[in-house]
Image (cartoon, rainbow, N blue to C red; front, side, top):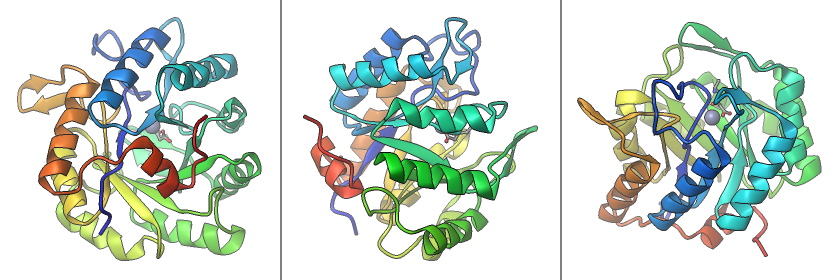
Length: 276
Ligand code: KMH
Ligand code: ZN
């Protein structure tokens, strides 16, 4: 069992509208502020989706580069850019995200129904992401929305080898309508399919957040929390900010005697180069 817990914050996502969720960080200033707050209470990695001047999701390369630079300047967090983007983003734009040269990037292991939409991840596209990340020394986090995608990950590693950094890290994204449910039995069912030697984190969408967090901690996994995944803190209570979710995760990790890992420990764990 891992001695400590990697806590990743996913503060924004591509799904919530600023008009509906006014405390969602969408500007660079809001993102940096939330990143600093979250680092202070136990986050070590940030999973980033950015928004344009209109607060809508964008994969604009210059904005992505500016975001990576600002987060590196203001925090020591491991900076992970989403290559998932929004369901409407074309593959070419998603591949170009890597040119912003983050420490890490997400790599979703298959196509999945996503609410009323489809989140497309063709096999050839997944392979291309994996290869381009390795060429650039960017450490992937393999996003798993359904259990069969773990079999695809095994195939990817068998056919195309280990990622940059040599370590495999998986994130179970549970409770998306169309993907695997966010409950204990599904998490337990996923465990034997995770490649040997790999680490995993888990996040539960919406109301599955707490059940998945507690199950992941018990199973020796790491945690992802944030307003990308849930905007309610408890029944009838909206999330105040991302730091509130990170603080709760850090508290539960301490109770589980698996306290939050420091950023330097996480860089070692994931095979991400230490920052200067
Ligand atoms: N926004 C979802 C369509 C990722 O960041 O890599 C995809 C997503 C996964 O959030
Ligand atoms: Zn994401």
